[in-house]
Length: 349
Image 1 (tube, one colour):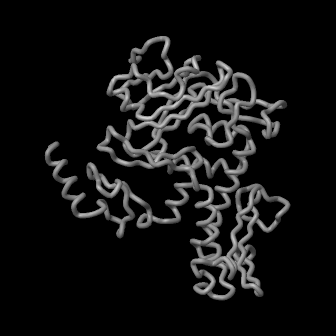
Image 2 (cartoon, rainbow, N blue to C red):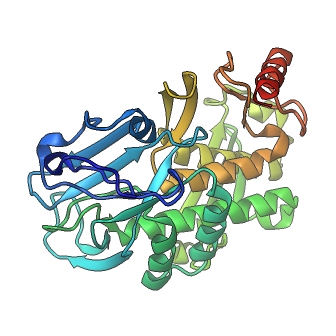
Image 3 (cartoon, rainbow, N blue to C red):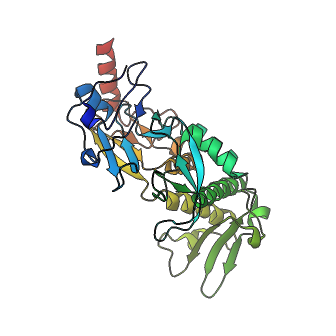
């Protein structure tokens, strides 16, 4: 049912068929109510929109959406226009924005989904896209999962959240290249990796440098590169003492470092830490973009089941709600949280 709200303050509308599992968002034409949690919402609706922002430009039909929802405690939601996206050509962009093809949403109604719950499927679909990047394949992905949430701009009147084709090509190539490199490292394919690692003396330096080809795989043909994966360690900049631990001429460990560095650099500044008052003041990490979720899944794949940070299910976990397990079946961060969870579970019971 449509939640009632005054027509003059209709910045968000929520349509739900089973409580709050499916919602749609529509923008008001009034910039005066932007950047607020609307006072007409009751307690239940405020839970649905614990943090909500609507950024309005000076043009009444041009908006940028950014929603951070606490409906599900494991973190953020992402918005997808119900009418999908379309490609437009910009010949008169904003300052410092190159002309070209841009992906823009169609219509005003949006559906939402729990982005972290679907990160495995999102990453798998994006890897498939990365092997053959076309406007059609990008459109198909975006219509299901939404835009990447990067390099957005209002390039033309009425086009909200426009995203350049160049951003899709760059991230698709980078993600595919990282994934291919990780497969080579995991398989200890030193013959293939030796083409990308160079050891030099005076001063001692190890450099990893690999171009990503049109098919999303590492290549030795630099003129075909869609992206580059690079990292280096020298005697003058080696605070962790890697060169002392690596065997001379080793290619496997420098390549492993290249995987971790590429993912960490891509994820820097892409997650925010939010305090949720309606979930026992628990703390959750919220992604700032769809592409951040894709890189975070790569991070989980490299870390493996034991190395992935997990959410402690105990209510009011004193350790912030997250921990790194010491074994694959490690469920709680400590014994007190296990007892706390069992106590609350038995009371419900």
